[in-house]
Length: 99
Image (cartoon, rainbow, N blue to C red; front, side, top):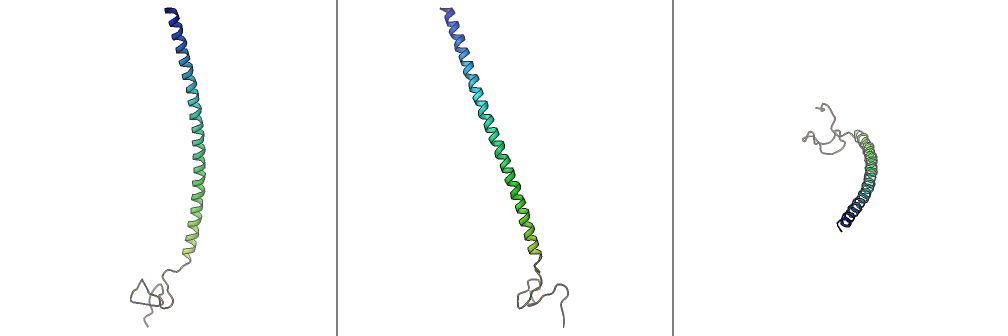
C-alpha cells in the first residue's frame, strides 16, 4: 500500500508540474501578444503625433506669415489710437507732424 501511495503522489506531482508548465506557456503567449499589440499601438501613436506636429508647424508658419503682413500701428480714418490716446485718426510710426 505504501508503494502505491508513492506512485500516486509521483503521478499527481508530475501531472501538476505538467499543467503548470502548460499554463506558463499560455501565459507567455498572452504576454507576447500583448507586447506586440502595445508596440504596434505605440508606433501608430508616434506616427500620428509626428504628423500632427508637422501640421501644427505648417499652420503656425501660415499664421506668422498672415499676421506679419498686417500693420498693427498705423491707422486710417477716425479710429482710436491706443498708442497715443490723445491723438485720433491717422497715426504714423515715428515722429508726429506738429504743424
